[in-house]
Amino acid sequence: DYETWKWFDSCLFWAIDRLSAREEGDYKVYTGLKNVQLDQKSVRRGDFPTYTSTSRCKDVAMGFMQGKGMIIEISADFVKHHWVKCCDVSWLSKFPDEAEVLFSRSEPYASNGFALQV
Image 1 (cartoon, rainbow, N blue to C red):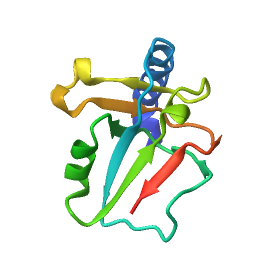
Image 2 (image 1 turned 45 degrees about the horizontal axis):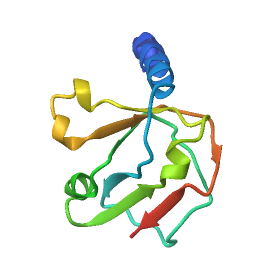
Image 3 (image 1 turned 90 degrees about the horizontal axis):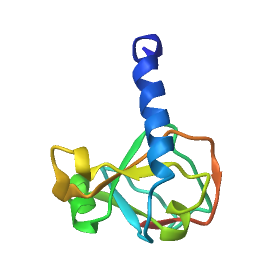
């Protein structure tokens, strides 16, 4: 329930906000979804209703997909928009080789930044 987690949510939201301001580079990120399929190959509008873990390494995302599912590729143009809040968390991860980039929960984004590979 949200009441239990609201302080953690608030701290995580603001930490990602602050760290995203220091992000540098031009990179795509990927997330693997197990047992999920979409009919379309791309979407023009996307949002993150919750925190979303991605990786700079496509192979890592494919490992989370576990064979049957899909990979979401998020373009470098989308990642670097000022309204997108994400940060590299590999420096504090138990699994730094995953090259994890964490996206904050957010308002809907109007962008062409999502590309789906099914």
